[in-house]
Amino acid sequence: MRLILYLGKGGVGKTTTAAATAVRAAELGHRTLVVSTDVAHSLADALDQPLGSRPTVVAPNLWGQEINVLDEVRTHWGDLQKYMQTVLRRKGVDEVAAEELAIIPGMEELVSLLHIRKQARGGEFDVVIVDAAPTGETVRLLTMPETFQLYAGRIMNWESATMKLARPLVRAMVPATDVFESLPRFIAEVEELRKTLTDPAISSYRLVLTPERMVLKEAQRAATYLALYGYPVDGAVLNRVLPTQAGDTTGFAAQLYAAQSSYRQLAHDLFAPLPIWEAPYAPRDLRGPADLAELGRTLFGAHDPTQVFFTGAIQTITKQADGYMLQLPLPHVELDKVNMKKRGDQLFVEIGNFRREMILPLTLADREATRAVFRNGVLEVHFGPPVVAAPVPQL
Image (tube, rainbow, N blue to C red; front, side, top):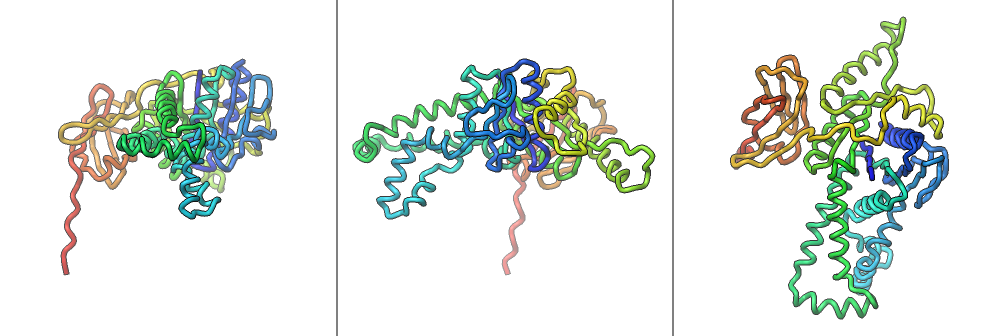
């Protein structure tokens, strides 16, 4: 079983990249399902074929699917949702509003992941490739297993007397079911989901970016939070790379190419030691299996896109007695003096001729970076206690 998720800022080409990977995997003989979790589905446009909420045959060894989130919520959370709707309606809440309020926040994201895991484990497919929503939504989606477990754990910790009183009432309103007994089963599913999503032998996360400053910063944030939650990243796709403008040294295209070149190099520096696959800026829209197959071959060459291309943490954060330590592997950097500067949630590090700009998680953003050392190819940055803001003078 392989599960590959593509994520990145909206508009960078995630859908096309995910579809191209799927087409190439199918070409190599893998039974492949490509799935969209984005509310604004565009996977069908990329494949140039209508898709539904169930897997649809696109080509030999290739299926496509656009998940209907509302259907999945009803399937996985139906009993408890009906119970909560009934309670809300008895309190005088409008029926439509009650249906919306009965969905626990984040449930839509969670059931999407559960559905994808079910498809991956069902045995019908060798690999499931996910065209994820834009970065912010995807990071929220990936944190939902932990958030839900915390929420559900509080429900389960209600006093036993309250539970005993509630059960007859629930059975009266929702015959032949016990929502409180179904909750532990659902929590167990979520725990298994978490294990699947963090297993590097099964799941891989790939960042899609373009050589632009804002896109690179958002991709850095995504990489930081993926590392924080233990999600294994095995590569990045640098999309829409302009070709060299032969004979044009001063025109608009040449200036654009020069600007892209600096960000292109920065992308390779920022995301080392991850492999970076580059896709050229196509002069036309890529649509259908033939175009996508060509792009897949361009990206991965002779390599199988379903293989695991990188193992190991791209960064780790560990709690220490006096604060935290951030570890960042930099295997290709020569040992030299480390210079460091922190500004807000950004950390700037220089080691010899190497310079790296990092986005810090909120855990570290309000802490002082006290020292940095470079040891055995790993940069270690130590953070002290939170910086206490100066009190506002009273007038």
